[in-house]
Structure formats: structure tokens, C-alpha cells
Image 1: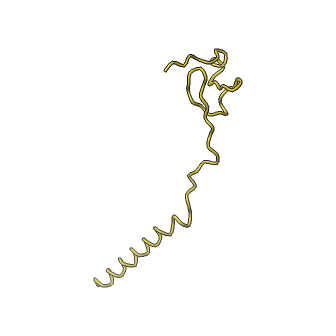
Image 2: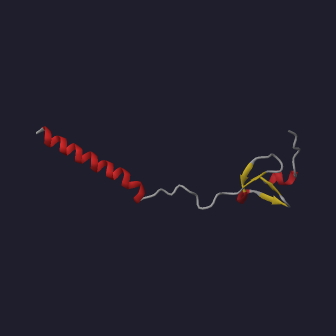
Image 3: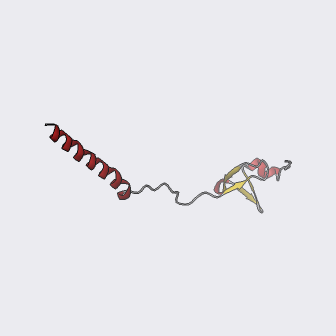
Length: 77
């Protein structure tokens, strides 16, 4: 009886290991983004935001209409 339980446990462990190592290769995870967002910095306050949400003026970017109207901010380190 103990031999039978031993063989059942051994077969179950082998089957479990086989499925564990076979599964990741069969269905790879796709954790990558389609295209990373380009980030820009607001010329007034320095906050970073996605380029598609920023407001451009010349070569500078702004995070809001109010900052766009104020223009570039004072950059003191």
C-alpha cells in the first residue's frame, strides 16, 4: 500500500513540475507597452506631463492654459 502511495505522489509531483515549467513557455506574458509616452516639462512650473496633454508655444511646453499665458517661469536652483 505504501508503494502505491509513493508512486502516486511521485507521478503527481512529476506532472506538477512538468506543467509548471511548460506553462510560461506556452503563453508568454506581454508586459510591454505598445509605445511609451513622451514626457515634456512645463516651462512655468517644471512639472512633467505626457506630450499629448501639454500645450506648446514655440519650443516650450506648458501644463495648463494659465501657465501658457504666464510664459516661462523663473528657474532658480
